[in-house]
Image (cartoon, rainbow, N blue to C red; front, side, top):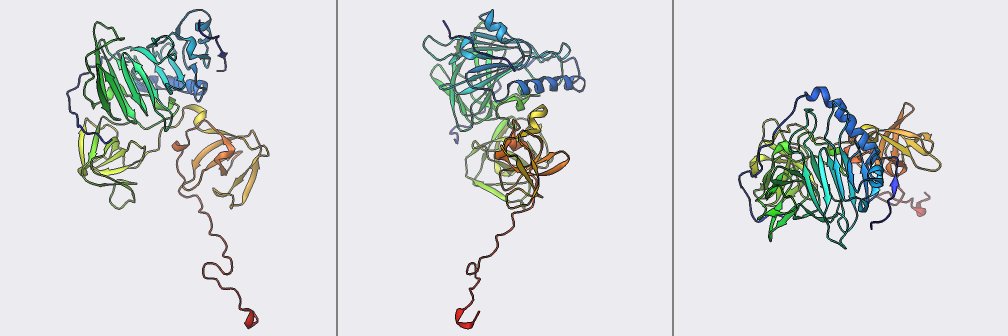
Length: 452
């Protein structure tokens, strides 16, 4: 018998360069409504899920959308029906989130935040069935069977149904999905067709093992396992080689719904040919962030219009620009084009723009991002502030309150916004140099023998 229900309503470089033909079958499309028409409704779905489920505790499932079907039925299913409801993951055997349907105003969105030793968050988007098939005496959801709808929703701004798995920063996790052992330290998307499961690397390094064969895949790559007669619990044979992913799998993906938002990679990877400078902007006059050694595999985030520079990301998360001519490429079409480095995706709705003052006696709003700058006004505790930007040299944020703008230390603000997604204010006043003390930095003391 499972535990009682707790309900809270309020809610390395790689040695092998793999170039195998695509094993995933074509994705059928049922798009009937232009994305321009239905996008506002889809954004409302994501905003509601953000407010209801972002940063909720480990060990709980959170419903971020329409009521899912849940087994066992009865109290457990009823507990999960409300937007923002939390139920212990160990109480849930099966979770089926409904399709994304803008016309009917409903979308399936649910989080399962699994504690150690699994140590990851599962986010179900759209028509997804999740079944816990963990053996007795194993942690709940150590092994799961996943099945997703195969067609696109009717709204052109909605993503494919998918399951996204993510581990915390600096962590790693292992889980069995559809009979394959998945080890990962970043973010992976899972989508099923009629007889296969595809795993897509979105960040970090991942490996998939079946029938004694391990397939390593990087961000920008996909690995596929096949199943017989729709039996998703048991793969047939070994995993495919890693290849550039099908870009349709990530189109319109609401990545800001993740506990840790990220910039999506483009299909494929690149390898440095010799030591290559990673620069802050796409030109040779920009500063060098780091020199990346020969043979390192990187994911692509975007490119310049002329295709001469790629915005790339290392497995460490470090990003910058590299000349395309210095990279060995195993890629598909790079659809994301820009001339300046974009900021990461921000939270949906007010959570991405608001903060609350925590300091018991309020906090001083200052002219610059440091305590050496004069105070403009004191903002009282519990006051809501609007987030504008972040400092280029200190953990401070620029905010607006009651029409007044200024800087406060981030430690004094409670916010669910993704701070790395705030624009950097390079016009922030620099910290003034300290006043020189006599006798230091070449300043001499008066000679007492000469009468001062």
